[in-house]
Amino acid sequence: MTALVFAALGALIGFGLLLLVEGLRGRAVVPRLDGRVPGGGTRQGFLFRAALGLVIGVLVFLVTGWPVAAVATVFGVVLAPGFFGGQRHQQETISRTEAIAGWTEMIRDNLAGAAGLEQALLATAPLAPTAIADEVGRFEARLERQVPLVEALAALGDDLDHPSADLVVVAIAKASRMEVRELNPLLTRLAESIRADVRMRLRVEVSWARIRQSSRIVVGCTLGFIVALFAFARNLLRPYNTVSGQ
Image (cartoon, rainbow, N blue to C red; front, side):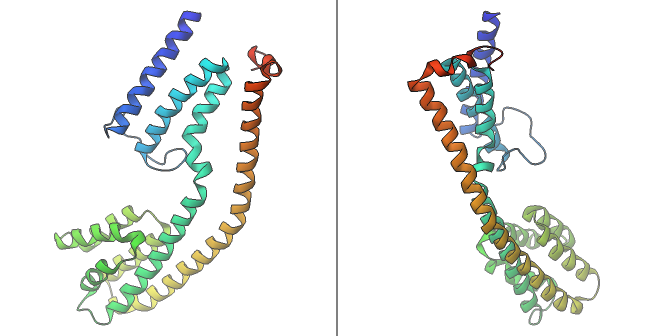
């Protein structure tokens, strides 16, 4: 039994190190994951955290002998960005939402002086807010390659991956097939609605910031207490060495 446990640990360490090295080199080891990844971030970041979590989890097991602590460590490393980076992610979302509202207003203002809808969109691309500049830049490149406007708009919606952007993209796509003159009032209402969404997100963020800070303090104190006991009063943790303790 002991030999099987150590063989499994060796395999996990080897696989974790392989993922870690290949992740740093930017190479794929496992098939591409679809959908959202646990803890947020990119798929490559998730694989890197999973590899790092496996390595640290095995080390925790070798030091403590607690399988539960090893498993908890793996999940903790994988989900860490969602716990510690939630505020940053929310601020990025707010910035992107506000940028979409600003770009919507740019399109509306340029429609009056442009020769057509596509020209107005091209005119706003170099001036797009920083938070969405890359996505809008790729949209501009598609239009310059003569990609049909509706197809380019669909790709822009996929790139932005934001519900407010979807509303703007659908409105522009419909206007390209019908009357562009009705687009100005619609874009105005959409920009106002998106800015209202930004104000709502800011109010929510204020309330969530206090909760996140309290949660971090509780988790930090708990982990610090366990580490202190393990270092200076290991006899108090002896019950956790048994199966029933685990």
